[in-house]
Length: 602
Image (cartoon, rainbow, N blue to C red; front, side, top):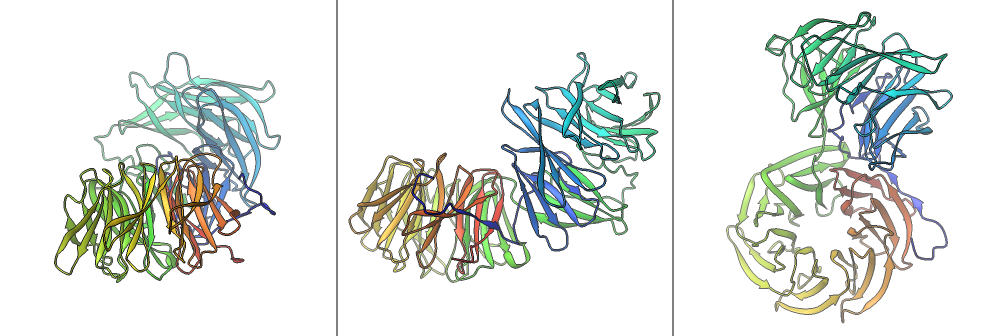
């Protein structure tokens, strides 16, 4: 932050109700803690711990890039997580204290990616497996926080190993597997070496996706990419059984086997997306399923019926808007869908899906009768906010897609912006909707539209390096603001004599509405574009977010950051302060939605 500030900014606290997206692409990323009261999962560079009953969440921050694997020790005392990094750079493993939610140690030996982690049976050792560019397996001593020994994970003639699993009884034994390789390892602590033994599968050559060791260590099963299940003897390292896909055995997950069921056709459940995680709760009365579409399901064995307990976008979230006058309802949009959320219960109320198109922007009509939305196929679509039923469509609204949208407070007009740079005013009536006027000044996509309270003026921000203040009664330009930036966001001050803007130059500009002159410029970020901003109803504070992944709360008059929120793992695309100043909601490119508690002192 390159401005003078008497005190360093405080930290924004996540709200008790924080909506987050499970990183569903991480194999075995969803884990039920041995205490049966918490689940853990990765989201970008954060590990989330969520209490099952209260849904209260804690965030483990420490990784500098996306988390690639998470594991919990059998005694529940430790959590370990590994990350991805750039080729040639070291990828960190972080050892966490679960009770205190604190970082205990940062372990760095592998390069590129941590492919897998496993705690030994009695939590004496942590086993780590490097990615394809690293190819090594390392044994770490947990108490000493140091590496004991390491070795190449697979033979030169075999493919790379992608799975590491510990023995159920012995700390000194573990299994690695992957593309054409299955190895059982023995730790020789005295000589600080690990010795592998290749497992023999005859003529079968399979890509191993997952491994499960029996409770007595006598055998282990592996699941393959082709759906087969192989059973191997731990002592002689030979395959003893083979269940091809055609038999009545169902491999529940293509990338994770913590449960293998012998199922009849009447004992199946259907979930949305490919299953990437399965995790027991306790001794097996219940288990959880995570999918690559960021859904978390709870399943009881007796009824064998799935219950969706968490869901979120699995693509970048482009916009967020609150319903008029309430902090309880807000909507978000992404590729293919619009979702309406109810904050008191941390619950998704409505999902509107339009396949194969992208929703760029949304707005609630002030009368609460419709949600209007801007789509990349050039259409404006309006939906009923309770049922999600399509109310009307404006076809061919813009030739290069609709990129921004806003509605007047009297619900009689919609202002839309397009990829070609045009701003269009639409007359909306009960049964008909028609084009009122076309404003042609912008030369590139319109990124943001804000309308004045009296509905006689609006401001549009564009990627052509201009912001234009329009008279939408006479349909003429009143002022044009020029700057050496691609404008991403704009806001009226509540008293409407000033606007604030920002964009790719990372600067926040204060401008006079009357003559378009600049009043002040602030350094809004040290890295990356600022993509979203919003201002409080009294104009005392505003928030910004962008490619630096930080939510910043600013004092409007002082031009200083008062609070900073760290939690996003993807670039922040938009954020909003709720009408009652209860929450700040931010959305990002990794599909996450975060609710921040608005500081009490403000």
